[in-house]
Structure formats: C-alpha cells, structure tokens
Amino acid sequence: MPGLKHEKLCLGPVVGVDEAGRGPLAGPVVAAAVILPPKGVPRGIDDSKKLSASERERLCGRLKGCAIVGIGIVEADEIDRLNIYWATMKAMTIAVDAVAELLGAVPGHVLVDGNRLPRWSYAATPLVGGDAKSLSIAAASIVAKHTRDQMMIAHAATYPHYNWHSNKGYGCAKHLAALRDHGPTPLHRYSFAPVAQAVLPL
View 1 (cartoon, helix red, strand yellow):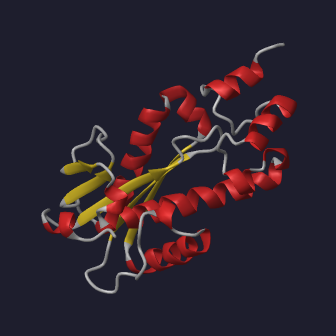
View 2 (cartoon, one colour):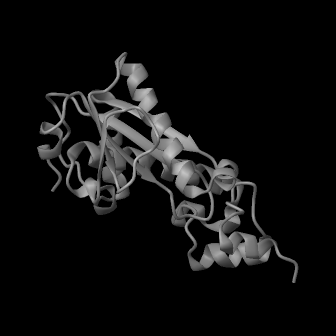
C-alpha cells in the first residue's frame, strides 16, 4: 500500500502527480496533481489500477473535497502535434501550475510517477512505480483516471460504434473493428499506428 515515506523526505507542501491515458487510440491524456491535507485523508487510497470504478469515483469526490487538486488535459489533436511523451509532460505541467495557483505559492516539492520529469522550475523527484509507493501520487492517479474515464464515457454517447464507455479509447478488438468499419473520429490520435492505418486507402 502507498504511504507517506517519500513525502516526509521532502520540503512541503508536497504535490503528487500522475497521468492517465498515454496508451489509448482516442481521447485526451489527463494528469492530476494533488496535495493531501494534513488530517482527514480519505481511507482506501491506492494505485488507481487496483481500485474499482465505483471506488475511484468515491475517492475522487472525497479528494476534491479535502485536498488541493489540479488537473491538466491535453486533447488528441495536440497529442498528434507534440507526440504523446511531450503531451503527457504538458498535462502534468498544467496540473501542477493549477495547484500552485490554488495554493498561492510554489509547492515545496513535486513527486512524479515514472522516470522522467517535465521541463519546469519546480523542485521534483521522479518515482518509478510511484502510484504504489506514494500516497500523494496514488491520489493523483485516482483523480486522473476517474476524470479521463468520465470524459470517454461522455464521448461514447456521440460516437457509439467505438465502445468507449467500456474500453475508454484503448485499442481492444471492438474498438479496432469499429476503426476499420467506420474510420477514425476527430477524437482519435492520428499519429498512433492503428489509427493512421485506418486512414490509408485500400
């Protein structure tokens, strides 16, 4: 279970950062940045991948009520312009900038899930597997995943063929079949190979 060991090694306030949506063929990449409160942290925070959708929804609501939360969203067209790596870095930067604005000050330290950091001026540490180690990063993973999932469920109503309410834009069999049959939508990432192939003339 994630804890506060890494946070306690840093100058506060400490921001945890994680993203959701690097791998899908459609939709945005979403990052979240979270400063947990000194007291009253919701129980059950864990790596978002280990939680059910209903638990993520519950915890996301609780976190937005007690923590300082920033969200960064980079849409598919910008992912195509920047590439997914730099789009992810931009989403993380937007999220931390939002937290800094809410805080009214520069955070003491930022803990980022993964092995790379955005090009920013914040004091920061990358933490591989951070969503399983740091409570702040795990909280961010929950907010990022729930936020992105809700966006894709909303988009599924407009583009029902692609089964996004279930696959959230990932390249599962039904999504790939719909790409072949109906072609890509404006929400697809045209720089990703399966989408690019669906555009090619037969």
